[in-house]
Each structure stands twice: as structure tokens, then as C-alpha cells.
Image (cartoon, rainbow, N blue to C red; front, side, top):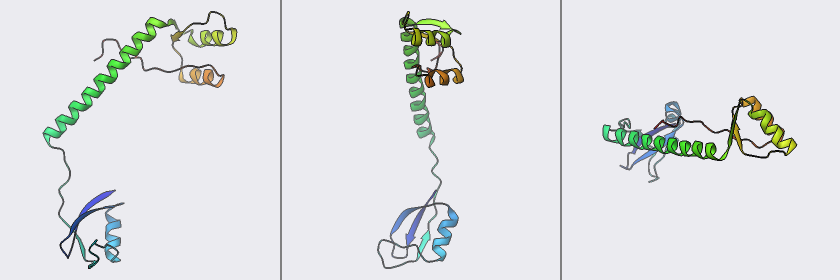
Length: 141
């Protein structure tokens, strides 16, 4: 998509979006561009400057992005802490432990550990409720 600043011979300036520059050229050649004044079909492109963020805008957006990432990391660390406090770590035995809890209904408890994406998919297909959580380092900011 491309946006052009256009001007009608009546003096009205307006913006319009086109799928690409060739589309604008095609519509102009067929005289299909029109102004809201309805008096003229003589529309021309105006000189436009690219929308480049100023250093201040860039720094502001960068700062917002950094704050967002810090907030997400903080929430993920809080989630990790909650899981560690309220669940048992079973490591590489996660898949077999999850099946044992689901099918045998013995020793029902919250567990966490390691599983490949394929193993996780198999558990879900079996109706075993599991969730994948991004495991962030406790010290990451």
C-alpha cells in the first residue's frame, strides 16, 4: 500500500491510498481519479516527504518498547515463581508423570517439567491438559 498526497485543479488537497504506484498511474491514465468537489478529474500527485520518525519520536517509541519488554519479563518471572512455589518439578519425566496423573488419578498434583513440542501435542490429543510457558531466567530484566 502507498499513500499519496493529491491535489485537484480546484485547489482541494487530499490523501488517498493505492495498492502500489502502478495502480495510481493506471487510474490516472484512465481518468478515474476524482475530487470531492465533483468539478474536475484533473488530479495530480504532490511532493511528499517520507514519514521518518524524528530522533525524539524514535527514542520515545524505543523507550515504550523497552518498558513493555520489562513489564512482560517481570510478569513471566512472577509466573515462574508462582509455578515453582505451587508445583513439583519432575524434569524430563514430565510426560510420563502427566499421563500417570491423568489416567491413574493417583497422586494428583501440580507438576512442571520438560517436554518437546511433539510430546506436548500428543498429551493434548490424549485430552491431558498441559500448558507451555516461556521459562525466563530469574535474573533477566
